Length: 297
Image (cartoon, rainbow, N blue to C red; front, side):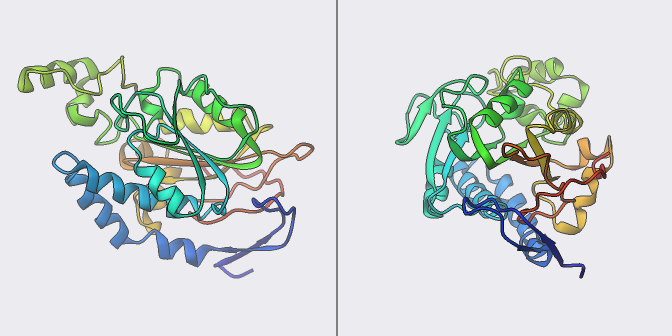
């Protein structure tokens, strides 16, 4: 088998198993250094021009999700959709978008309900079991006091064979404290007090109330503990170029160096044992074979 191709069976699309080709070269063409620089420059404009940054992020994220599942006519639940940046991007890709605004984090709609949005809690989704093709969440998990409960809920509402795409900012990353960074390295409460003294107002993301210390290690351990229900398809630093994605394999270092972490999972079909765990690809995974390697130790 060549470096850039991997054969497998089983499909994320509803037509049933069929041979597929895994395109590692295509994944590399997406996760380029130019993309990383563009996203970083957009991030620097987040405070003065949030519309620019979040539209850029939404468009990039939809392209990334499209590397793991076909989006056309698929039902996408966005847990934490907020003002609608992702709604426009997913609908432009042909998806049937439903957003849930949990009223936490950077994407809170601040009282204005976007068409196609519902209000509810990420830890008690007001959605029926096994009803969505793709369950997506961007930068919400670190704003939830019970992150594993939210992950369990995302698994519950996803159809068998469906995809879960979850990203969050690890607490130990440079932006872990959000607007209080980098002082969160001295403690979340101390960083909050410093921000209050400096600005005269409380931070939007308040430690212990709307911001919690999420970690990559905890997320991967959760995925391993749920292997009967979901398979860990991919785990990677969200904004890094492909050649820097190795960092997520190094415990400790990944918490600081990943900046933002993505975990892609696939819900098991009835009667299946598990699916292949693909190592840091950023591309579509459509294999149903069991492997015993543990690439994220």
